[in-house]
Length: 639
Image (tube, rainbow, N blue to C red; front, side):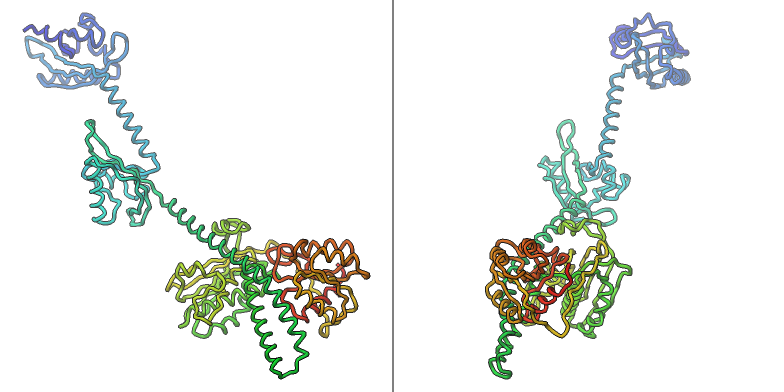
């Protein structure tokens, strides 16, 4: 068979060169691959046709081939195509210089330009995929069929703590025990058998340091060119922050629902207390009027006095309800919480007994708060008594103050509290038996108590809740069975020193009688109106009575003498008491006003604190209180 026939029909290019690289023979394949006729390259040095960067390497390959006859040498070079472009050739050299039939270096070369381009494209694709996988914010973990890790990206390092070097080649280190790892192997086996991967799953996993991390996992199957499963890819998202926010949201929702429930109960309690105060005013007032007419020591007097004592207890209960419903009238002052605690500490120690150790941790230099001193004292007493009852066999009670900031819980529940604004914190904690979650959810409700029948009214914490809320703050409880209870109260600092109101002058020597002044009495409750009218007329005042504002305006216009004092309820059908006072002031210059009410109302107060210039006689009021306040308002200096 003719050698040239084989050479001309070969897919590879055959070349024979001398030891210096001069081409002695070139097969016909050079036309197809490089565009040259064989006679165009025969006689030329092959190095002249190569890329300048490849010539030194090609010359070294030629020298090595010449030095070792009949040994194969492989080299990659770029050869200039007739069109001027560079074509990559893979050449295999063999020296036959010692063969008298050849006397040359034989080269078999193949055009691998397309293959090199494909390899470069593949390399770039892999590099791009590597960059994308490493830049992904989620962990990308690829596992082979034996559950060994093949890919472990940067996010996986960050989320779980194992480095790429520690993870690759090992089994998935996301579980803390063999049982969990076997379960995971079973999941991989199912995926490799062609079963549908599990839906995105969520659950806790372990970091390298043993700390938990909440993750969401997506699973997919890797297949080869034939479609056969060869591995599993898991996309793992760290949802710890999301879970934390979901828990906070659920907790805020519980707090919000609790606050809304307490507000609803508070509105109901406020309405009941308002009506009940009217009844108590009549009961207690008429008892005061009738008792002097009943002989001392008689059975009837004893019965009436017992009724009076019961009415007093009812009045105290009503005040608790008003405090819880935030309808109690406050008398706020600039207050130093540390001084308040120090001033009541001796009394508090007497209340709790010797088997409970009391300690204080008061932060120096706290800002002042604007609060009612008596109400703050009541908060301290109620909390300390609750702590005492929770420690029947003794324990530790801590009173603490500190400077803090309004947190997201306050900002979410109370619109007036901006997150991050300063706050004054009062904390009362004990080492008692604590409360479970169910008990905590009802702790601030009125009449809810865990004490035996007859041992508590269930109004202690309800009163605390009302006072704190009405003072512009918020309160919450942290407690668990066997771990004691901590009540934290947060109050906003006073914005600026407030001027103390000038007190009304107090009449000396008891209650002074009237001097014939005209009093316009406006009260929509008939029994209260008749009682007040009887007391005022008996004390020497001229009384004009009205059941509502329209009737009062008519009486004032018909009055023969100037009206000296308007004594009016705040909340009435039609016009309210404050609006009525404004209209009457135009008819009777110098008119004095005394309001009566069973609870604080927005028409006369802000968060229950009386507006400047407002004087209020709280219901239920006694005969003496009514006459004293009327006299004081009439005798006060003109505004």
